Length: 149
Image (cartoon, rainbow, N blue to C red):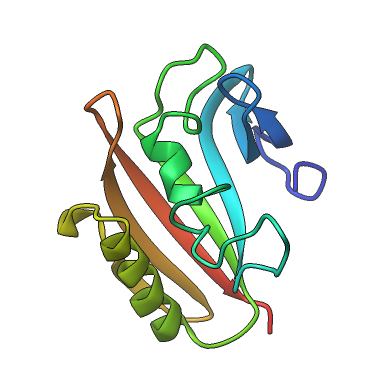
């Protein structure tokens, strides 16, 4: 992305986070990391260490990594107030995944307030969610879903 757009932003894949954790995309302005993005495929690809609900929780759990403060930190380990998730949707429609992911949030016994809210469903789905981090602060997640079926 960095090479294709004329912008002052820099997109770094596999950007380091706390400990050995890596976020899929870190977005920088100059030397400052100001936004992180975790990417997932829906449905989760089959594999011995993969769980169908990993968009939300479990080993590799996308939203859960932000809640645990493993993801969503700048390059000085300060928590970022807003971050993002991208989903590459290979089967079913956006309504199906909206319902399914909100059910996984219920299954994780997280508060109802943490469920995804629809901003718009068009060629790209845009959603938003707000989550409680382990340290007590909130993190807003912007969700972008792309139909790649």
